View 1: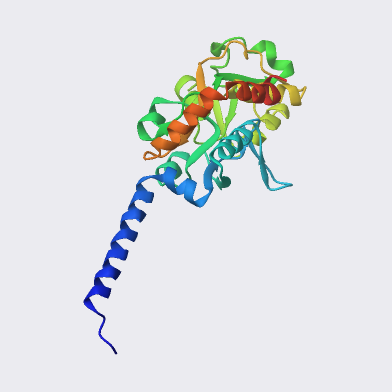
View 2: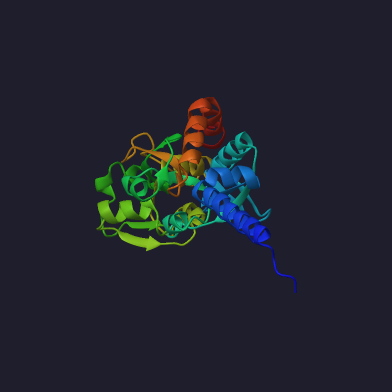
Length: 261
């Protein structure tokens, strides 16, 4: 076997060093990787109508946040790869960088902003209740719900469950895995109340006459929905924030289409 020349060895080492350098730059700059690969990885729970919902018949995601994510991807000039996540694992998946951003009706909170990055708010929201139409007059304040005989149903791991545990410790709390099934279960009498967001409550009231949201104009909290990202995605965050500010008319159109229609 011929000995490798000294110059060839030096050349190989330089190529390896350059490869490692550019690989590190891409690792430390996810925005560069997104643009190079042409793929934006988007985390979706797919269980929060009308924000994001996985249509099991078609196998595709639908909703307000899906259209918003697709518009952001179009502006970037890339395709979307949806990555399934859940509310209990949302932050863990974010920190483990399973996706570049998550958008599925995520409320901006101090805890989330401390652990990860969150965009500017793109939709005002707040906690309210979803109940059966015949029970609408029973629940006029939060105090009317604070009773052991009142059954509240929530999905695990989200801010709705946290709100119930912090503000309604007296109620009987039922945890149901699939958020999208809870409104139907409320209508069927499996529980009395669902603490949810204004956006979700407004949608279900329009879809099912058996349901009411008597406090929708007086939510218990004032919040905003934002886009969640792992730290290190500051360039993507800047891009998204600029998009949200620039495309406020488009976002208002989505709100009319999915929430206020």
